[in-house]
Image (cartoon, rainbow, N blue to C red; front, side, top):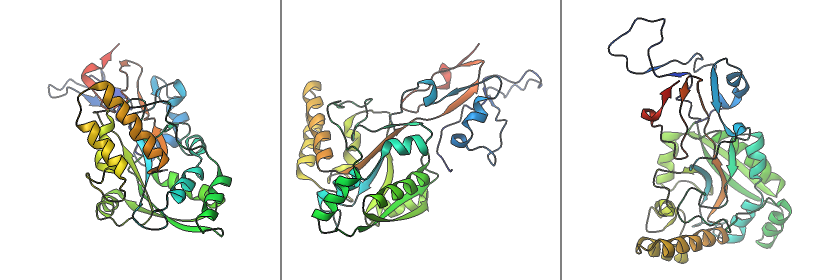
Length: 303
């Protein structure tokens, strides 16, 4: 499994190893006892956890999910995804909990909608779609596809944690709900160029996150006044504009609650998961991972 798991702190030592002569240029030494060829973090968590003197930060020790969210964008400018019922069917056809458990080894959390709990404007009353393949089939029949619907799912490989494997798992789930998916995988550089060039015909996998932790982070991805590549909804655009034009926190919070609800109702995306990054480090190091993925090593100390 190719992943984008952050393990920059694997076996981190914030001082020169005692067995080595001091070098005045050495202010930070990072020692990784596994080679890139034999280390795939999400496939080797038990091996890493078994290492003497190594602490592992992952979902199994109660860490919170990161602000980073994985989602499927949908090309609503062309059939069949121009019909909201087909977009809703894709959401109902998706079992996020199964993917988190079986693909990500529980290193993730179901996304509650377009906003994560860390983001300003998040409203816990806004819920995404439950897994319901029967309802997905019914919606496909209503939209004229009783015998199934061909759909392309584009995904990068090596950009996000388990990105290729997530796409493959989604294809299997969608088949059971009446879709006929085709998965196309590409290296990230080529993939992002295709995204910007509006070459994705149906669904595409991307991530969202950043240090701002505000609902306005969605502007470029969703508003037609941002990139405007694959989606346009006048109500959604209006809510983005309203959120950007007021400084009142209470009013902004209500606006972004309405925005999230509108995106869920219109099935702007297939809402997937918040990822849980995996960090491992020497027991001597005291450091706590942040949900925004900033690794502020000046706050790390040695016991």
